[in-house]
Image (tube, rainbow over all chains, first blue to last red; front, top):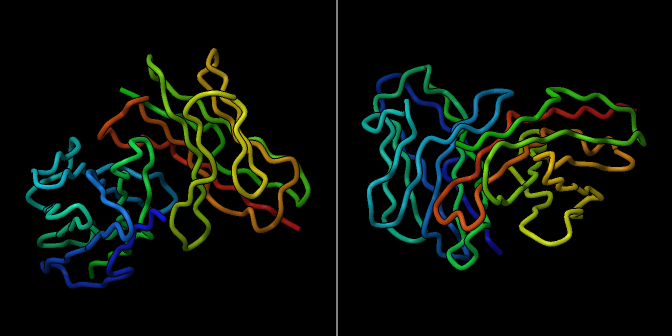
Length: 116
Length: 115
């Protein structure tokens, strides 16, 4: 149980285009989803916290107009990287908290974004 | 604000050697503690977690960790590593009764096990 999926797993896009990444909790309801960014050989950096039906809370230094987060349902959150630039190339990982077990946080497999 | 320190950036061990990876956190209250592993090209997997009770917790694949409250530490151990343990290891923490608070991660320790 407690499986989190992400789609796509890998995407290459041209500079200036937008990319949408989906995060789904497959067998549980997630009241809260988190989006992290991981640079090569570095730790996970929290970008934003997403609660179902409300606006996402962004960490300091993360541009909310560039990284649009939508948490439309208890099983789906999306991250859209708008007008992507090469410096946005990174590994994006979503995570979900299990509704009935407040401390557990499960991670998706990540999405490798490359902006050319 | 919470923070997590992992002192070893890269550890290289021979197979069958014993492993201990350090993790210290800073937070004034009660915390939940986690160790995650990320194998090359794969996603994060939970190795073990501590919420309460016995401070020595056992996880998957022969790993264990000990919570020492007085030292704000949660070191990861394994008596005998295997080549397949080569991976990145992350310590993480969040406050007890954390609600929507996300995990805070350490910078990670890369473990390389050589034959």
